[in-house]
Image 1 (cartoon, rainbow, N blue to C red):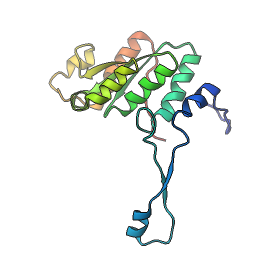
Image 2 (cartoon, helix red, strand yellow; image 1 turned 180 degrees about the vertical axis):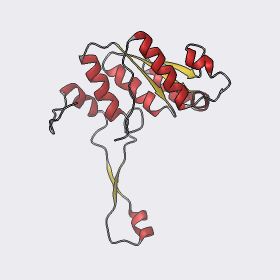
Image 3 (cartoon, helix red, strand yellow; image 1 turned 135 degrees about the vertical axis):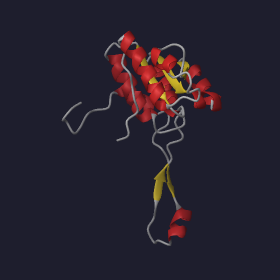
Length: 170
């Protein structure tokens, strides 16, 4: 954290951003017609990043700062798999291990997200799992929930004394 309004983005982070940034800007002509407005409406398309969302914008910076601090592994949870994919990608860029606790129903329904994380070297667990006390306590919730996945990630990170990362809506 810093009170400084201008913080230089480190060169390795800028290099990573160059893989998909700048993101394209599109004009929403159909929306303009539907609204019957003379205004020009534009939107940015953030799906062109390697993991397919805007979340690597945060994940890359988090992975870089942790790697620069000497951290070797990051642990997180993921609901639909976007944050887990973004963090797995970012960890790969900076040589970090990545462990992801993925909501059970998503783990089952979106194997491509799981395989994307694994391709980038992440270990992905179906949550609830038998690996943690939090997971074992929630066995009856086979579909899982983000709350259970978070609990498992926090438990493992606390035991290993490794950082846990979260995507924050700002």
